[in-house]
Length: 92
Image (spheres, rainbow, N blue to C red):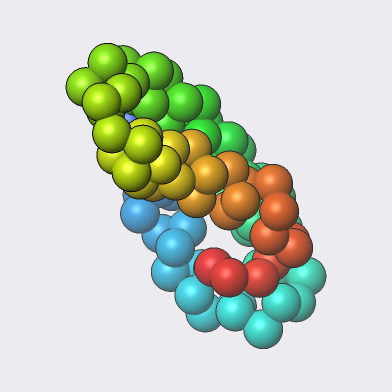
């Protein structure tokens, strides 16, 4: 029963956080807290997963510099900028 309750709370938390961030998009304290506690950790995990996916996709994209660049930008650079370059509370 505890697992079901925990899964339910995690699901509610994951799907409600973008709504909270969208409501407080003025860059105030609330959006900074949501960004710091929820969005940044998931962005960092997404960057790590994207790095792994890029390494897996590398043998298929190595034949074209354009394909490597496109895959690198989509899987590593974009999530990395979202996680590490963007100011807290902005761009949610």
